[in-house]
Image (cartoon, rainbow, N blue to C red; front, side):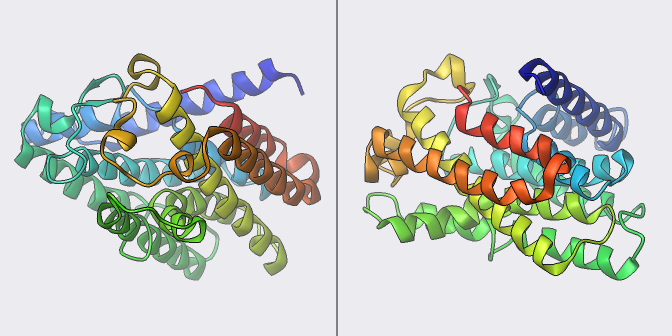
Length: 298
């Protein structure tokens, strides 16, 4: 498989996800129009769509239909976008730039940004209940539960709470991993878990192995994010560079240094690839995506 083939696949999924989100989000012609306009501003026309890419790549392993994967991808991306909107607000990270444009609270106002996050979160769950994602209603209930846990106090929101409480402190490596397994990793892990469950049944040991891969890729993504925050510029990132150091936040770079953080990322990447090898050609896209995440420059 050539790199150009992977790039074509990635572009195709990104465009497919953008079109699906365009259809799923309320039109600004509908009241309340300002809120709907802000929701679309927060979600459309930006971002790498890593979580939708992961969902579609995982779906290849279980031969899931693209239509089911679109729905999962949209729901996860809505949750992700809502978290970014809230994280950027003055009461949290107080940032002014996201995906190369002003953050939602800057472009609109604080109250609208708060409501955008609320509305995107509920729309995500509405979206994954409006069509069959699985041949088993019981399994679909489990998928909804998995997304709820990944988004809440035992997942992303809990990780953000730990992050806010950790400003100015030096965490140990296990403490840092615990925070990011929740803050960043939970939704990435859910992307793979939900994507693979849209298709045929897999054995429990196969699901457990893919869950491990999701956990590792979630941490890998954060390690690379910390390296980029320390080394890349704002124009490249599309968000404020160096803000972790400026805010005295614990990161893999502040704990390990750039060289050791890079070595850890390579180790995590290999761990995930070793697990995926057992799935053969069906895991090709997920393996390629894992390599892309560790090599990404933005």
